[in-house]
Length: 248
Image (cartoon, rainbow, N blue to C red; front, side, top):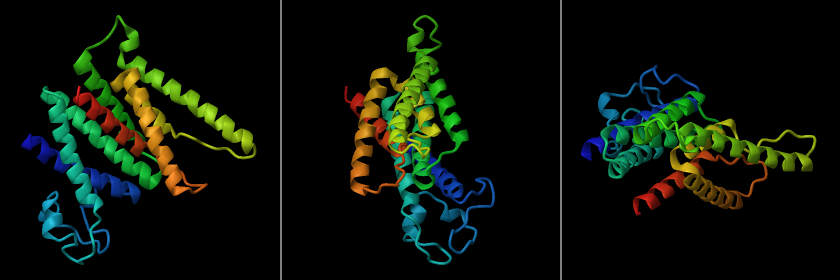
């Protein structure tokens, strides 16, 4: 388990890079990791997950500017996600693939929160990992086609498309001169993946929990024009579903 936790911490560090560079519209490859405030290139020991934050007391080693808590939070959460995947599955490849899927869900949640948009590349990487994970668990289903990953994913996408059309119709009926969106294209792909992995019953439960959480968020924020990110709520609902399944 220690190996998976350490790997998760490192993946969490990489996720931080993707999140903040996507926010700044920069490449994740270059330049090297640097302080966002003083732009000094970080030393290798500044990049050690969790420990560097603790030893530096949450401040940059150069300018002493405060480091966002999001960095150690994501690293710690990713370590926990990899440990959770180790608890859920026995096959090493399944553990790694599922843990990476959860890590990408976390990353997309932050992207959705900060940018109100997500990377199409990472969405399709997640879709490919989900398809591979389902293949490892169930093989290639040819007889009961309704139980196959692709059929369930297409069903989920269809449900969301129908729901999206209905919501937009109601909104546009009230404000006929505006073009309004209820769910982003990224949400459709995410929900398709959820149906493919968790099946019909599990996916509808996840959507129900996510909708409740989103409703509470709307009530608390109470801003008319605020665009609520949906993926973070879906991610939390997925974790709830996984926890409940693990207790069975």
